Length: 313
Ligand SMILES: [Zn+2]
Figure 1 (cartoon, rainbow, N blue to C red):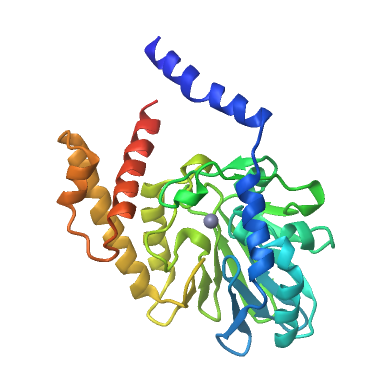
Figure 2 (figure 1 turned 135 degrees about the horizontal axis):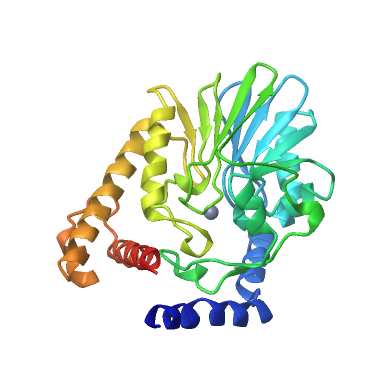
């Protein structure tokens, strides 16, 4: 009975209230801010065939193949013209398809522009599912994300090709592998590997602004994120170039550093919770130096506790 009551009071009520009255204020504010402030992207050349477009949303990976261009992510609908003019500085070749690393608006809202034009979009099957409904994001370490609702995508803005755990695409001299390692940043993340060029776009599963934001409302998992970073390490050698979801080009060592730091925080949190410590006491037991930000640390501890209690339900 107790279990039933918990389920009744936590899941269905909040869901039904939200679905009747989604509040897009925060989403709309962000879109206007992007529209007003973003005038250009920085184009980072990785090699003759690879570029990264930086600024106004997640990093976009550009692969220039023999006859076409493949994009990884597409930022916001509202700045599609800036994306296109940046792309035209690189090449005149047409976009053959776009891969979405996950469903979050700052990476995939360009679907609302490009999908309509008939450019095929590829994603993990769960990313597509999330795009089909209004999605309330988890606050977590990003306070401004609390109560943020991302509107659903229209049918012609959705991915047309999806996969389950792995997919391989051949493009000129390149093999492109898409991996989903289960729940991590969300439950529909794709790690995109350009095998022959030894370049990996990680989406938001790996970022350079600190500990990655994990969307617990949309299938994300901190434990899963740590596991994903371990799998990512195995896909790399010491020459692999990593395009993170946000931040500068990185390498395997950066991934290892983040993984070790997160794992330490995770294990200390498990021990602390078992010993009945409160969040503040657990935080004090972690002498973390990689990202020494007390608020982020406390938020992670709280999120780990939330993730564990949801598992018990
Ligand atoms: Zn994201």
